[in-house]
Image (cartoon, rainbow, N blue to C red; front, side):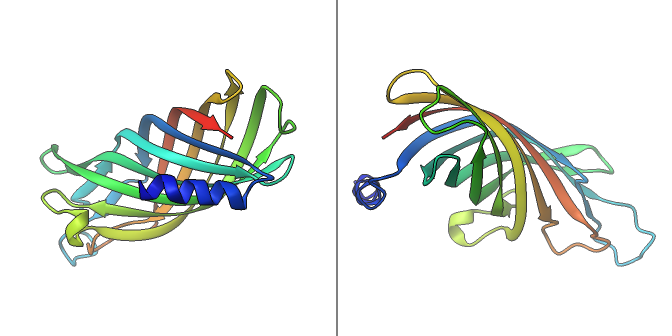
Length: 194
C-alpha cells in the first residue's frame, strides 16, 4: 500500500513527465570473476570465483525531456560461488540497486525507442548461508553502462530489452584480490506507463 501511495505522489510531482514502472528477468554472467585466496602467500592460487545465473528485478523511469530519462531499479541475481580447486558450487544471492541516466535515439511518443544508458549501482554479495536481512553480505559500489530497446505495444504498455555491463570491486576479505568484477546483464521486461 505504501508503495502505491508513494508512486501516486511521485506521479503528481512529475505530472509533466512520463512515468514507467516495470519488471524484468533474464540472465547475468561474470567476467574477471576470480575472487582471491585464503592464503597470504603471493604465489597462492585463486581459490574462489563467481558464476552467473538468473536475474529478476524492477525498474522505474521518468522521462524528463524529449530525449532523456532517469531510472531507478533493483535486481536479485542468483549467483554461484565456485571453489576452484574442487569445482564445487554453492548458490548465493547478489542484490543490486541502481540509478541510470537514459538517452533515447527517438523522440518521446514514438513506438520504438532505442536507448543508451549509464549510471551507478551497489551490489550486495551475500555468501552461502548468510542473509542480507540480517546484515550479511559484502556491499560494493560500482558503475554500469549499456543500451536497449523499448517497444510500445499498447497505449499503456511496453516491452523492453536491455544489455548492460556492470563493473564492481571484488567482494569478501580474501588475499590476492585485485581488480574489479565484470557482470553482463541480458534481460527482457514488461512495463506500464502514465
